[in-house]
Image (cartoon, rainbow over the protein chains, first blue to last red):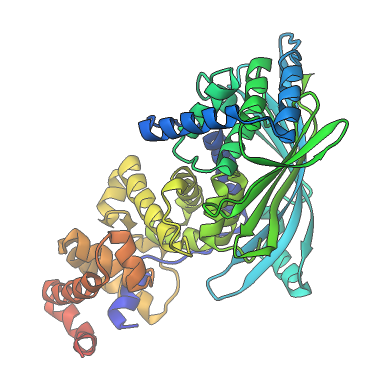
Length: 304
Length: 197
């Protein structure tokens, strides 16, 4: 580096983040992306995509129902008759979930730390979907090596992760996907609307968007039922149809490198979701990226 | 998941937003450093978060042919710094803003290394010369000299061909030499000669 470059570099001094900086960054990122995920703007309809979606939908309807279609149709019929919301003033929709994440942090000097961490998440959403309180607790970091463990604590990443500490975030002007637009409350209409979203090109992506409508959700019975009817019109594999739960998997298409597995209970509540990275050229290398278990959403008196 | 490339994770985040969290975890420290160099540590945490929020909202536009998201994130961070200084617009800040999104902070110089002495003694002259460069020349020079980005990364951020980055840097250094006062230029003269080789 030349003397000029060194002088210029000294005019704009470097700074490494302190644990407090990392904590501020982490909290702001998670708070704001949770809002962003819930309030994504919908884009213009692409007529060609709508035509393709319509033709696909007509084609599927013309076929005999598959076992997964038949099972989902039955659940949708039940879901349309069940309203979990017997609301009083101050009541919120409450869902709890447990998940395990793997985190990898790369440093400029080539150092890398990989660890897994458990997260307990509790979400309270107001009946209008406009207010939310999100409470997370991260515990049990697990490391590949003792060096990773030592570096994790030395760098204060336990503080950044708020390890063993319950973080509570209140979100105002939130908008759950269920209220992001005036969704059709019939299965075919809802599926058309979902396929028109710019990020939806495959059935796996459509399934993911549909599941967002009923994840930690204040969705009314009509929308919940329509969501399940729309799911029944996708090309899905039945893993297991148990007495109290149906387990389903999307099919790899070659257009995306993912498979989605999910479970619905017999009242139409989402109980489990797993995202699996899948390389069509190496099917044995499939690996679960995220796995989350949800309790059924229920009504509770306001957040703590 | 630790083996997943950035493009795989961003593609995954289209179906499960949580997949983007690993992009955040992987790059947050280097983005923090990039932002802190440009606007100072005080605002860096918020602006780092802002960078990732914007990236999250724009993730469907990420070119998945790229295995790494680094230069894409640096480009977003660069715009975040520019917007931040425009938005805050304090007079002192604007006076010290040498280029769009680059805040000169002489008070941050703490130690007595040769580079810091140079920066303190000749900083005002260097700042004046930098201000006289064209915007593209200034950005290219600062991205290369200060944040040590590669030609490829600078090309991505400034949306210019990589060959243009080389010629832009050459021109920027030549203009700096012309713009500096004689006594300051003399001190850096031998290096500019080195640069021409």
